[in-house]
Length: 461
Figure 1 (tube, rainbow, N blue to C red):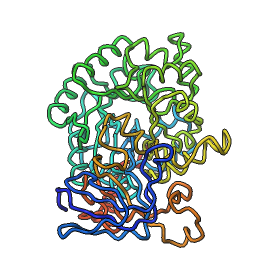
Figure 2 (tube, rainbow, N blue to C red; figure 1 turned 90 degrees about the vertical axis):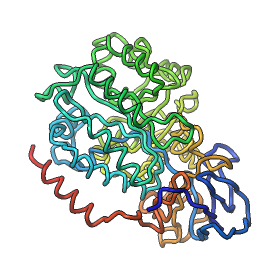
Figure 3 (cartoon, rainbow, N blue to C red; figure 1 turned 180 degrees about the vertical axis):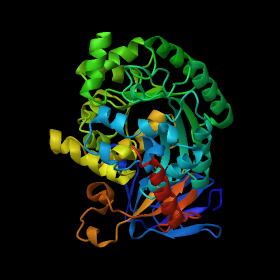
């Protein structure tokens, strides 16, 4: 597969959704010209040029590529583990991912990453932020590097949220039952500096970013180290990410231990700001939503995982109304069983309507969360919308299958119908990474075999 952008002309799509809000959300039946990795023109009836590859999109709708802002790629070998299938978050952490952390060799981590990235691309994802916490004092740091390698081989825009824990005993629901020794702050920050110097690109259309992302601010490190980690991140010019307020237990712990709500706690430890976004934010008080909005702190909304673990429904419509930057994410598939952003967008559109009424979310707003919203929290200013001059990250969904017969408005089909909605083409930075439904160079039979062998190595409790 070529690593260079192509000269492309996408002709005659059924509809084009931009990722913008309001009247600009729908572009109608327009063609798109892509050159040098950038959208050069959007207009009806564009004439093909001799050097362009023309894609006939008459049976497709065009969406901006999904920006998945919170994932755990290593969990792609931990789907539907029986001991955690009916567990809540704390029980699930202790039963599923943490007992197996030390078993994830670089080879296993690579298989999991390949499996996850393939599923993401085939669901329309063009950017993935992976919250990677396979780190402990006696472990290897190689897994972070291999994630960048695999993302490059797939052509995926990739953000490594370098996680990890600095304390084990007592509070951490995973580490507390293990013999693993957590890293020191010196180990964590030294590796982040190494990763930054090797991979981080701060440009608006960067293909590689590094983020400082301790696994949780309350359980993973002593409170006195939170400001030190925040200052180190900002000193390196890196954004910050972590889990927050995922369950009622999380909120109760903060109130009992610190006499504060979780957002109040992170505010007092320098962990709010436009360079920070949090995964989940399921349980929030109105005052916390105001604090997030006033500081520009963002959210990775993971509705499927939150439902699967019985954690609750994040107040995403209320956060958006207050001005909190909102994005979508699949979370780890060990607590989702699907790495599909099409599925995530479908459920996000539905769940708030079920809880708060049919006017609480729209298809256009859901697309915005999953594209422009995600690019915004990651600081990828050239990504996330289909506009002239923006990076050419887009997906063509096939809407000519039986399940779409009878649709009056095919533009909304991928979100309203959900899976299965076939991705015919996926374009990242002007490069075709899914070509007529196939990821070039990827042998899915081989990947299936490798995944099955990996599961065997992780089966024993």
